[in-house]
Amino acid sequence: LMYSGQISYDLGEAIDFGIPKFNIDKFDPYVFFGIGSNIIMGEVENPELHTTYSSAMRMNYGGGLRYIHNPSLSFFIEGGVSDYGQVHFGLDLKISDFRF
Image (tube, rainbow, N blue to C red; front, side, top):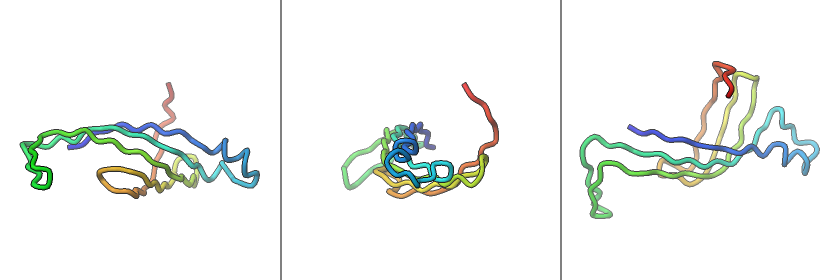
C-alpha cells in the first residue's frame, strides 16, 4: 500500500513571456515535488543494505509537460528522481469542477 501527496508549479505563463509562440492553452510545463510513504504488510529484509523495515518515507521531484486535449482530458509525461522510476506518463480526467 502506498500513499503520497504531490504539489506542482505551472511554468506556462513564465515561458509564455520568454517564447511568444509557445501555446500555453495546449502545453503546460510544470515542476513538482512529492512526499509519501510505502507501507508494507509485515517486515521486508533488504539484503543489499542489511536492514529490515515495515514502512519507509518516499520523496520525488522533477518536471513534466502536460498536453491539454480539452478541459476534461489531458495527457502528461514527467521525469525526475523517484524510488519508483524516473519517467512517468499517463492521463488526467476531470470529473468535477470542485474548487476551494
